[in-house]
Amino acid sequence: MIHTFSVSNYGSIREEVTLDLRIPGTAPDLGCFRRSAAKPDVRLPTVAVLMGPNGSGKTTLLRALVDLGRIVSSPTNPVHLVPFLSNQTRWEPTRFSIEGEGDFLAPGETPRRFRYELVIGRIPTEAGADLFVSHEALVHFPRGRRRRLLERRPPGTPIYVSRDLGLRARDDRLKGVERNRSAIATLGLLNVPVAARFAALMGDWLGSASNISDNETFTPDTSTVIGWLEAGPDARQWAEAQIQRSDLGIEDMEIADEFGGKHIRFNHVGLDAPVVLGLESKGTRRLLHLLPLIKFALDVTGLAVLDEIDGDLHVDMLGEILSWFRSRESNPRNAQLLVSSHHVGLLDDLEKEEVFIVEKDDSGATRVYGAQDVQGLRRDVRLYSKYRAGVLGGLPRFG
Image 1 (cartoon, one colour):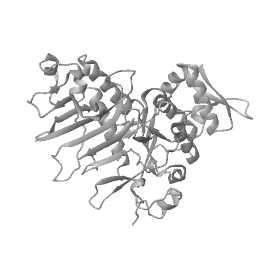
Image 2 (tube, rainbow, N blue to C red):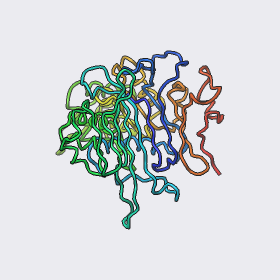
Image 3 (cartoon, rainbow, N blue to C red):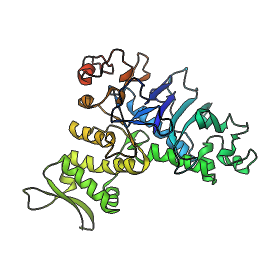
Image 4 (cartoon, rainbow, N blue to C red):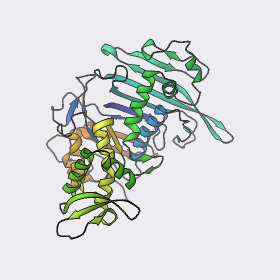
């Protein structure tokens, strides 16, 4: 599970903003909160909803998470990282840090808390900018004490590695780390098991169950959905049950192999012929194409990062999706769902520890804070009415 994520000088984010998911000790012990396996005194939500006006930076924050996963999970050149475009910050570094828990050190054992930091520096060139890794560190906390696994300083300085990582200081594989690529990703490709497992963890968390690609959002195409449905009966039964919950007129779903290809179609109450997917409502199509990402997060990766989840979906269907992650019965593995939404009707179904407000200050820079940080906000009040009254902030301004 993710505990915190911070980023600075990235897109509309200038100063460091932090998505802090840790729940204060004064909050009641609700069923939708889960205790950290690595640090039981820490509780975390399984749902975090980013709300705020259009253009406030909600997508930017989620995209920063996905970009971090992309860089760490494969030896990718971070050329697409755009800084906050002011004269003061244009050539300043972009900084990421994430704290969470995973079993990459000892697979199958109790997850351990870790912190990963990545700093991407910039040098002006005639072609634009030369990006390089100026700092990278992976630490864990055995018995609560900070211990480095890897630490990397600017290019030309030695990379520190601990024996817990499975390397010695003079290992030839360290020479394969290029100045503009993650050491973790490179060492993972060079068969360093701990590095490979951590890179896979970050790739699964921040990419495998996300609908963000560069500056766009997407959903799996129909052929991908068909492949997922045909992979096993459990996926097919689960998907059909969720579609029936969203459209009470649907009796069942089938995959037909006709007209030179495979198609999804639905049998409806009162109709004598099936309806192909392309003729279904936008909401049904949108839900079906999101289901593989959601189910993959619940069953495999433990995290879904979904931007603009409310497109074409009724607010009650959105609440239903969130409930799959909040319920211990449907989410026994403590998977988390991080989403952006404009559907303020969701607020009355959420606890204040699950809501994060994203807005811009007068200089155009994004800032983020939790509803739980709003002074005097009681638990027994409707969050919707408080948001509409401006108590939570993050309201759009017109004119």
